[in-house]
Image (cartoon, rainbow, N blue to C red):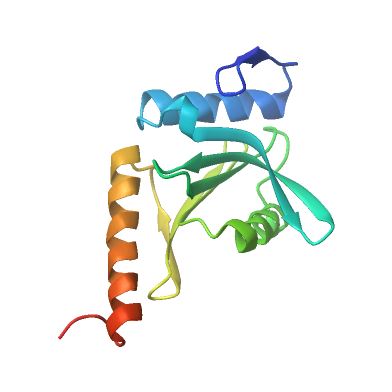
Length: 151
């Protein structure tokens, strides 16, 4: 199977099929350029190394979405949620997606309110970029002026 992100042939495994199906959806339906996706993105926490299955970046190269893909036979359970949370402590992305191709979970982080919201579908790339720009703008206002940035 050909991976358009890494631009090479890969061994077809159930997990890889899920990852490639997700990447194709993100590209063709959500409008994410393949050039702004990375498979097996390396993360480091001290001496420990981790590999995030799929990371999307904004146009400035900042991580935007972190996806953890499992084979269809692997349930998306607490251990998978703990894994992606551990990875996101390093990346701090606003969108998390877990999938085994059958069951999928997507959520958006609102750091100013310190809350997560479950989403029923993946937003377009343009919508993801727009929503993070608003969050960054408000956060910058709060940092510069204190309070909630509104007077």
